[in-house]
Length: 123
Image (cartoon, rainbow, N blue to C red; front, top):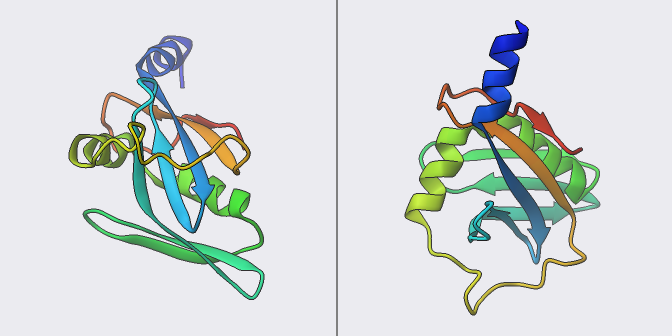
């Protein structure tokens, strides 16, 4: 990747925060809209997730919620999250869970819509 294409990608990056709380996976954007992406499952000390929308993504076998979030951060694309933010209700007004001490990860995605996974993730 050349310096100019890297700087173009950095300018086009959109940052989202993913959370694991109460058996659910949530995401927030820079406008503080909060949405529910799907289920976070725990069984016998291992975690997995099943994301809603379009082609449902489901994986399991992670040792912690943070590891499940890291996998989601490396799997989802800007197009998927943008579609979910467009389609889903904003939970930040009234029904928002307390996420202050919950596992979370920030991910920057390519807003140019090339369908690529994360540009970077705070793992």
